[in-house]
Image (cartoon, rainbow, N blue to C red; front, top):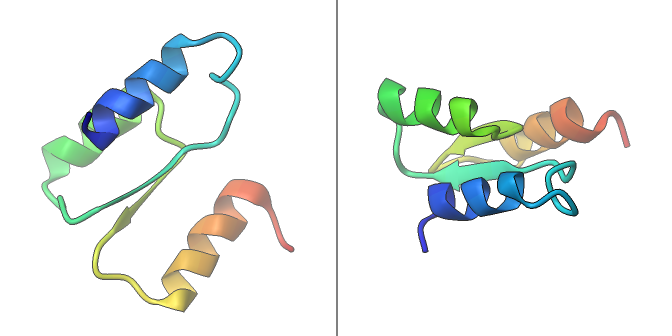
Length: 65
């Protein structure tokens, strides 16, 4: 199962659809990002990434911690 397939499965399940979903992928093509956004991804991280990028995505998703 790909990450996009997992995202679609999570978003189609009423018990799971509210869970934030951060996708980490090496795919940086604009059309892949748009497809993930349309499928309901909460945030998107392109590999490789560092701790600061990860923290910024987590803060954007969950708020300051």
